[in-house]
Image (cartoon, rainbow, N blue to C red; front, side):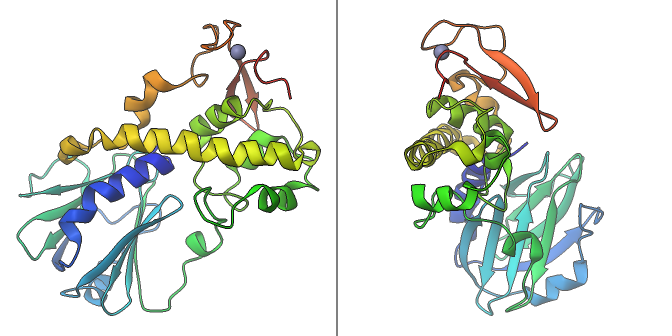
Length: 271
Ligand SMILES: [Zn+2]
């Protein structure tokens, strides 16, 4: 499932091909995404200059000269690619023609992603209810501490809660807690400001590393698969149950929390 680093990598991949360009047409092969794609809404952005491409948590936002926005979420299996031609690959659901003759193509086998075109000033509940991601300036130890000091849930669930802090998926939640040496079972209301500090620092470190790893595949991004596979050999705990910890040689443990897999080292993650 594409997490923040994969979405950031995708955004960086498509950005140079879209800046200052416009979309001239739209081919809808299959509109039944997580939220059905409204092909009529394409008229809002047709021939409008693209003025910015940004990432908001796990959403890609393309903004146009008339302040309308195209919002993309990659869901579980979505990918975006820029191509010189329409090849009609299986699961190429939405194809946007660019004014230089290229195409922006959304492919998504499981169709849990979405593409939504918003009018100027139109709000979108899925984005506007999201908390900030760890890279936003005001996200610091004190911010996190205040958000979670009364919560009796485990810290792993906190990292996955997009309303508190967005953009951290299941793989990176385990990695971030390993890096900050905090047990995933620790209850949120028992974390100190100092531990919150470590979590924020590790979040940026782990996600940045993944973005960089994704960046190395950018030159090949026409076939970009927005999956964390390329980062796999750099993982310390995720998916490594029974293998030895890269730091202390203890066996990595696997538990299930809130129906999601968690991996951790009981020796390194004591606090
Ligand atoms: Zn260890």
